[in-house]
Length: 151
View 1: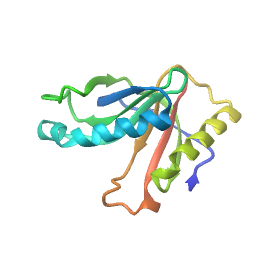
View 2 (view 1 turned 90 degrees about the vertical axis):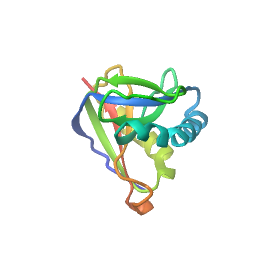
View 3 (view 1 turned 30 degrees about the vertical axis):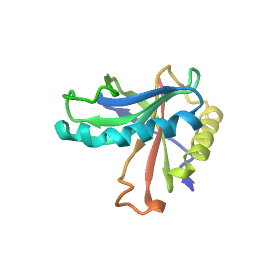
View 4 (view 1 turned 60 degrees about the horizontal axis):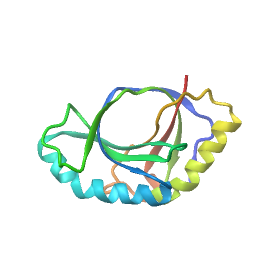
């Protein structure tokens, strides 16, 4: 596992986001949400251009949203999916290179680093942005951005 230990600052754009939301411990809800999203992706792609895969989450209330970014407001979504225009904003970004199986450990380390580095956090969703496609990218070359909302 390779995680950057010093974050850079990025401005996340407004994003059309289609998702499944689960509430509860992430170790349970994240896999459930992704299983449902992957089952529905082909139906989303029939009428919408998917531009990326990401999750949004809040630790305090344990809200986890797994989903896809789409190029425009979505049409003809399966009933199980929700949509929102995610507002984006300023984020501090850590980058994980390696297997998705490293995400729990990497996220824990990123939270520890954010606390130690006293990042000026604001209320908002954290983001995990899955930069490349695991179907064609070797596992050790997968890139995941772990982003914290900052002021």
